[in-house]
Image (cartoon, rainbow, N blue to C red; front, side, top):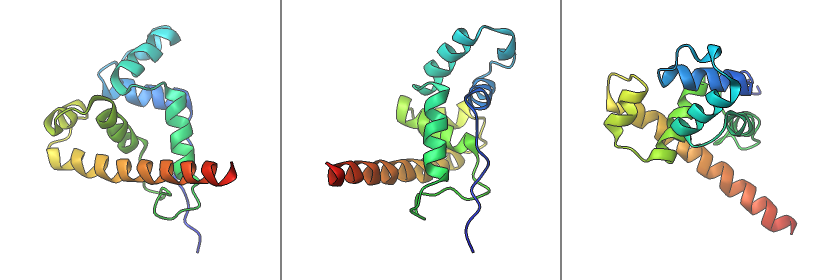
Length: 130
């Protein structure tokens, strides 16, 4: 039986999720450009990049990379924030309001490995095609 991927996300949905996690609860009252700037300061990428990465993980042919139905966009943001800031685990846990550093560590490890495998597959594919 084929695995069902989680729902697709839009850039606006990623932006809203990331900004609310970062404490910008009234983000909808600000201009789009300001919201993108705040998002990029928190995660190092624009929301559209998150959409591309989320979709690549959702639709991967590799079962070790592909997301499962219960995977959450917030967990991808944990990994992206970790890769962007390389903060200590307690800072990641605090930013995402996790009660334990173990929770944050669990998610960034899972998703960083998935991103690493996805990147490896994409690079290999490009090298084989050239």
